[in-house]
Length: 282
Image (cartoon, rainbow, N blue to C red; front, side, top):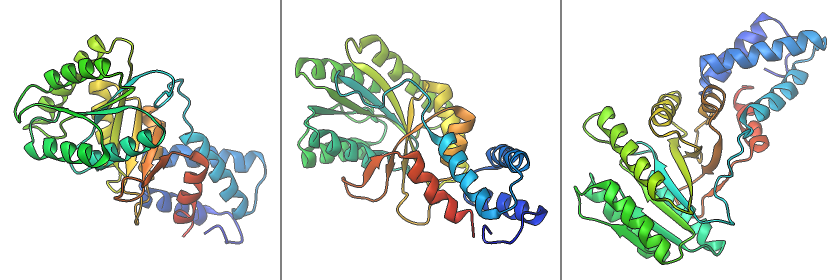
């Protein structure tokens, strides 16, 4: 596409289609292309390769975190509430963050507040044992808010500087799920004390625009601060990150690129723009 000899209507149509196929989404695609086309006209650009450079810069700009919120501050204790639907890679992402934090010398604790699924409690306890961090958990079916409350008290008593709380990803209805998450968030807010609060949303990078729908639902319910984008190790295009950033103003903080506890990295907008572009240039 960018190797074409000229910029015509067919070029823009192919570019639009390629971006949508890359999971960028129609609304964000049109917004981006309107801006790029205006720049092309203003600068009298005639080479498709120059359009590629403009797109790289625009994608990077759209993805850069403009918030004043530091993802996980290192100089103060943090309570990190992790939300997301089941199957998004939430538990694995939590394990990755624990491994990274421990490698940085932080004192980490986990809390298993997804009490509606016995397997979730077991998973968190297995990861806690494997990674050598304490886990606060109650019996299946117990009050998730009580788990969060007890975990905050335990973290404070043990001088923990990073408490990561897992939460439910599915109840009988979406309404019930969001109401339960609001309650847990409220308990964390009331009892966080000197802990900085963060809400991290885990989104499966392979779900396309469903990821935007999920992000909107969770953000409306608990006001998420950032995103952990998972499963970017295969053919996932991850273009949904653009839609989430543009439409919700929600920054991507971390990406997961595999199943192992070491397969994560801080999000780099410039590097991510490079990975999106080749797929949009077929």
